[in-house]
Image (cartoon, rainbow, N blue to C red; front, side, top):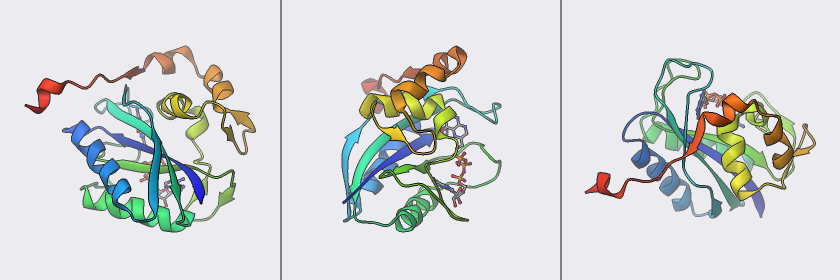
Length: 170
Ligand SMILES: Nc1ncnc2c1ncn2[C@@H]1O[C@H](COP(=O)(O)OP(=O)(O)OP(=O)(O)O)[C@@H](O)[C@H]1O
Ligand SMILES: Nc1nc2c(c(=O)[nH]1)N=C(CO)CN2
């Protein structure tokens, strides 16, 4: 079995529903077991900043799928959930990124593992730290708990725990 970390993100309403649909899609795959999931975080947009805040989370899965099979499946789910690719780093109903695949280091045209921007993104490192603080990021050769300390204070302030509003579902 392979231990993999995935990042989920959405900034189009209804954001919680999109996150839940993405998570459900992952759970429904016969060869994937979700073993841990972080809290949901509300995060200010990074990169292209003229867009709504995101909800982000990170999950740990065990899977017999290859990295490329996993990428195919994530992209199919993104399509099914109505993601349109327009602006780079722009708004999306659901974004599913592969962060880590065991301790592998690989670069192909379609897939780079570890995800090339994960080590500098508070919206990835903070949820990842909640579920796997001691995991080492290959290439960086640093634990998540060390990388998080290098984040600028401003980036950390842009990430806060999202408290689910139960009454919003009624
Ligand atoms: N680790 C990875 N996880 C997901 N996609 C990846 C990865 N490495 C490379 N890619 C490639 O990146 C392409 C663009 O992905 P996507 O549209 O999700 O980017 P983005 O979400 O806008 O930006 P970012 O990758 O910075 O989160 C995908 O088509 C995929 O082939
Ligand atoms: N806060 C936040 N910002 C982003 C995100 C994201 O998931 N959360 N995803 C991006 C492209 O993948 C670009 N910027």
